[in-house]
Length: 230
Image 1: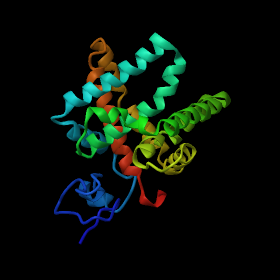
Image 2: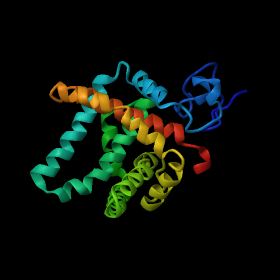
Image 3: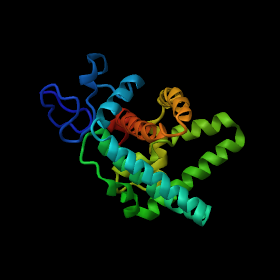
Image 4: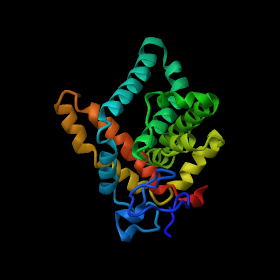
């Protein structure tokens, strides 16, 4: 019997997603990617994200819009300090929601606020993330970009592991992204054309693009989540 490479649960038939953990089954994409991690092409990751959003665009757009409004209002109506304090928990909440969408699980609007359950840890994680990236950018632009890519999975890790600490989550992201930073960078480049189109629509297109990017990034996380990192 074939087992899920993520949680070792039995795979039912030719399912594309594990019915136990909800993560994508790389083996179902192509025999070429069977039992591998970080090998699903970015084009396929984006296709899987689009399929996961099918029929749930309204919910995804609403949550993403609420996320942007909350951070925008706190940054402008109050002080940047308030935005700094809540960005970490909000990012973790968005990660929880995006992972639920990408795995075709029960995604709900209230998941956007799930990061406040571990407010202190998630706040410190964002603070450390910002400091580390800033320090690398003080050296040169390229080291700063590499740091952003290395720490990019921090909030997904915090969304999944309720026991991990802030610093450990950042270090785990760095370890997880070893060998996959270029792949993640290229995934971002694939959205440049969409950004241009959204600008031409006076920003309206971003209502669809932002959820699309968020779920694609969540799908990327599942692709590189090798159990050996646990």
